Length: 185
Length: 185
DNA sequence: ACAGCCATGTAACTTGTTACATGATTTT
DNA sequence: AAAATCATGTAACAAGTTACATGGCTGT
Image 1: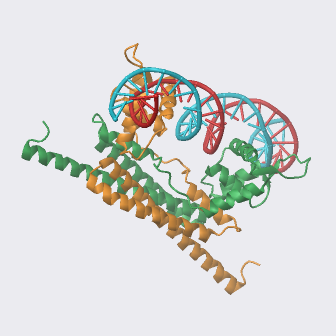
Image 2: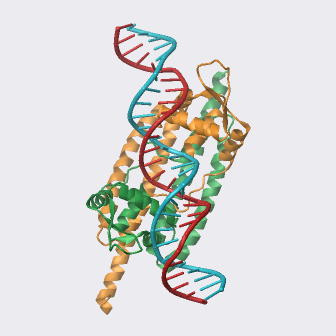
Image 3: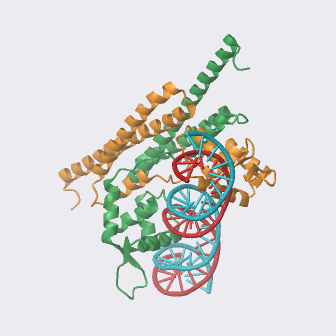
């Protein structure tokens, strides 16, 4: 949904053609978000199908200029007016992976957590490195994106640590049970 | 990708049929992740097409039992062995929305940020409420999922605050320019 | 002439997802 | 007998994504 609405948002600033949309989108995201041009055109077709954009422009122009329709304007206003709500359940690959690993006794959950932690911390360092550079460049979009990725990565590390802690606590409890009352046979 | 791999992970614990997979998946995610049964069957078809699972079982059974293949075993081992890497760019609806709002002067970015902040904090309170209950129930899967959602929501709030701060700083800088040297005409 | 960008588009495919049809078995 | 649950499946669509074909225009 974000791609469609992203292009629609760009079109709400004025009619343009597909190739320009690609460039606008990329420049507004600080060059961090590159689009395959083909995708822009397919998305435009689908937006037209849904009545959110319409061909607007001098017939006889080789470039196909699209403009936003009233319905499109309404859609984009709604988008900005409504907060983004997380889907329940969150489509979170890491979470599902850990939960499934947890229940499968053939899988080394600890290993999964540790490998993920290492990888995420590496990413965090890379982001921090990039941010030092971006801060001097004053590219607001790119800086904000990096902020977001850093905060997310930090949250992920914290979650991994929490998982470890809860696992240790659970294992300790199970251990205590086996020692005091023989535990599960 | 996570749905497919999720079912495959379940099958790596032993062959079963579609309906059972649905129940396993839901119970292992603490009931937080409900599946449409139809999706399980379509996903199984696709896994079979890709050679990751194969019909395994007594012919003549009314239930279609599937087992994991060697290729499937390899795929699931890889999944657990490799950390989940964030796609660059992150497909983050909130981030793209804020970045696009930032560049469009017809949009009230401050409003977008504030409405999102309110909504996210509300969610945070709801998660916290649910967690108090889950903590007593000792449902590890559900507790871990809530942990993840809480940490993510907190990170989101922090990011929104950071955005606000950076916007204020930018506006202050622009203001200073207009006052001292006349600024942009 | 040739490289490279501007520009448009189509075909094909993937995953996720829902709505619907169908019937057997079990519980109330 | 009716309701619920078990169980399997298909049709259809949305959204994202890539690979490819095609041609004009511009600078060297």
